[in-house]
Image (cartoon, rainbow, N blue to C red):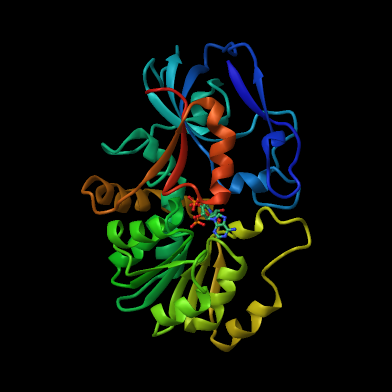
Length: 334
Ligand code: NDP
């Protein structure tokens, strides 16, 4: 079976040299462990941070060891009480076609009739991130203006829809016309700004005539620079991610002094958060999100690459914006 290891730490954008496929024997297991077959593998922007050694909230991947992340898998062999052959499970697991795991590392996906892959997207880490960032930090109110960057992605697409459900006017920033059409026509955003074609500053001024009350920050860089001057007094900024900075070399930081003055002047609340900070509220989030997904009131898209050999391409595609919604790899048919 194949596994994917971190071959060398990338400097700037990762490339084929970052990843190493290796053929190894299917691991043997103890009686209290289970053998899993990988069905779906999640590629996420935060994994880029773990490929470097800089300080972060997640430990760096080790060179020469398998990468790991969110996986949905099927139990192939089990003598444990907790799991039986055929069960579907999810967990943070190594990038391998077959995995030996302790049942305590795994949980059953709570997808309530949605595809099992949604345990890695709308009903998994990205959906929870959107929920807590928007509802616990952004707290949009009826009639307010909310701007979401990377708005057609896994987190942004859900964050924007959740703001709409609170009665806000929602403007999404995206990297193509088709993504703009998708968030407006399919997801119900009020407006889209295509940062590759439009002057973001001018477009936001036109599309947010009453200023911006919540900015759900996913990208950083020049897009955020266009947002800061438009923030209203007491605006909130859930600081979820800064993907535009992930492949910069050290020292090229993009958030600096220029942010401070407009924030002080308008008493803006900007709060960085990690989805795991809200672990005691995960149940609350599932109870809100699951019925919305089940009733078709929360749309989600998955961009699915087929085959274990597509994992690096799928990961790199996150930084060129090829995905709509959650970027996944289907390793084998469930
Ligand atoms: P997405 O599904 O949104 O995929 C990434 C998208 O970002 C791309 O499709 C692309 O869309 C956009 N993008 C890539 N590079 C740039 C760039 N240089 N400038 C502007 N846009 C860019 O990923 P996720 O939804 O998984 O993650 C979104 C953000 O949320 C990331 O910053 C991630 O790190 C963060 N995050 C934070 C978490 C937390 O706990 N704080 C948890 C999960 C995610 P386009 O075509 O529109 O450019």
